[in-house]
Length: 334
Image (tube, rainbow, N blue to C red; front, side, top):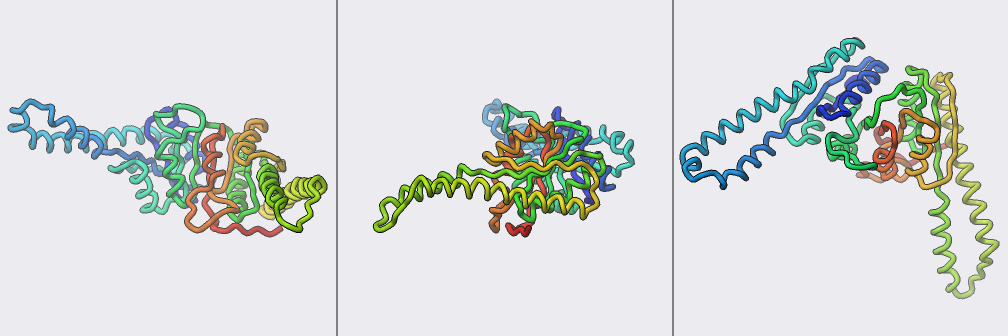
């Protein structure tokens, strides 16, 4: 990672965004770009909406001039306000000897942010899960969600600040998940973190499908269905089989860590349950400080912008989430 954007909007979480981006930049010796977008057009439209209520004489004499004055004033003022959000963090980055510069851009927030990210060939966007408008658990701000969907590379969704003493990686066997494991190990080495490898499998889905199949096959002429025996064999195969697949994937993850020279503590866990919910529960129970998850997983399809597990983990995780870029493949080999 050579370039990192810290998306700062002066909301309460902005300080954590700046601090975490500085810590990540310290790992990779990267440059940080402080960014804020301001939307003059929004204010221009609001001004025009109010024009009909102006007294008639002001419409005739001053309207055109006021439009020009208002627009220019708003552009100048909002640019300066945006810079005032970014410049106070210069000392933070300077303390860590991290190159830092500020960019402000007019436009819809997420759109302006993505344009700068592409122009600067940024490797990572660090952004708050929400700005000023958090209402309840599971809420993701519109800018954060759109960046997750439309930025094809890495996004770190910040929810709080932490020491990164425990880091977890959700593995599903896809190339994407093993790719983010390679990112996570750099964090774990730098912060001397305990590294948790997690695989979650959901037997309920398979049981639901089997039940539907069983009900259908009862009506197929000439088909003999030994229900209890078949159910026992199916459940035993699914439960043990999916757990064994998880163990193989985590073994591969551990081998990859050893090949990368990681000597820290590794904790491997195979958990049964609904995917995103079980990941979030594990994070809480194990006291994880930072969670890594792939933008997409084994069910990747061409054109998929964000997997459902990644989105829901970003929504409901109690800690910050590093969403790693998609590898574009669902293949894995033990």
